[in-house]
Length: 382
Ligand SMILES: Cc1cc2nc3c(=O)[nH]c(=O)nc-3n(C[C@H](O)[C@H](O)[C@H](O)COP(=O)(O)OP(=O)(O)OC[C@H]3O[C@@H](n4cnc5c(N)ncnc54)[C@H](O)[C@@H]3O)c2cc1C
Image (tube, rainbow, N blue to C red; front, side, top):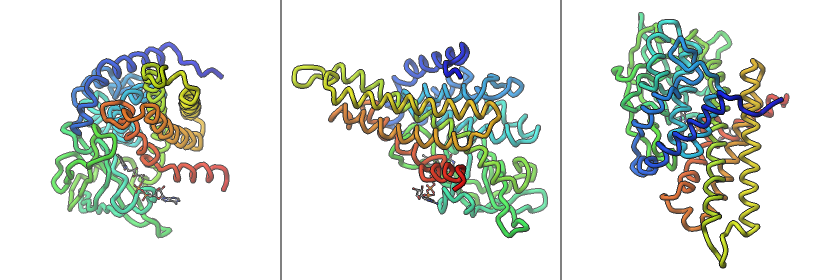
């Protein structure tokens, strides 16, 4: 058992860390404040090959693995979570379903641009009326000749409305199974298809420089061949995508938790109270020690889940544990980092204020903490 990174992974981690500090850090607060999407950062991440990290070279990827993606997400989120979630959603929710389930033609058409970061794809599962209970899908797709006709709406879809969004994959009810349950399938809807409307971006508490929209489909017609994978496999497809995605979200959460440690150490050494740096007070030292404890332990949890996934072993429970523990650690660390910064921690110009606002969604997106506990309990036979 060896948790040290190999040379390749270490070099990747270092180059993403440098990029985050030198390119992302100086400009991201302005994007956050203005709620603007960081196109220039995305373009540069594309040039670095980050959007292609876990994909094979035949599709234009870097030929790396899912763990490499997790390392990159951790280092990005250590500085900013809007940029990190843009990459996470672009790969794990956007390009991955097409890579995993798409036909040769679908891969050929969509993957090169997605893998290069020149285009983005959204993953439309959640609807205004349901999230955790994904079986509640109400969006319908009916086959009419050689076209699917889609009606319904999706809520909170990441990367679905940027200038470079090429498509969204949409889960829809396409029939009834012999046992009476809903038949769910996934369909590719290219941006600009008539009947597909993207609402203006939400006003969000956090992830303010990322792109999130409600989508509406009104008699939206796409060719029958836009079905992703097999008809009726929609449920199994998104369960697989979400299991993997949980490891990536855990890595992102570890980055935020570690960023809170970085900023707190810096501030505790500078800020004076009662004639000495606040870092000299044991109460502050213990807070930072506990923050490091959580970040380190959460990192081991996602390394373990990723290692199991790459070894082809069952990793469902470990991914849920990693996502649950890392997201709760991120929230705890953001709260403590803000406390260490005192009144300045409540000012948006300090990174910890951004970390605090960005942390809460980690306990909600890609499966809430309650859902993670349900997965763990179910896997324990309860
Ligand atoms: C910024 C942002 C980006 C997002 N991006 C995407 C995206 O790209 N694609 C996408 O499809 N979705 C996306 N989502 C949606 C996200 O995955 C859902 O919000 C999440 O899964 C929770 O669903 P919900 O909001 O409907 O909450 P609900 O399911 O309504 O849950 C409400 C509360 O009830 C609890 N609850 C529900 N069922 C149970 C139960 N059985 N037992 C105990 N407690 C329960 C939940 O844990 C939660 O606390 C995004 C959300 C946000 C905010």
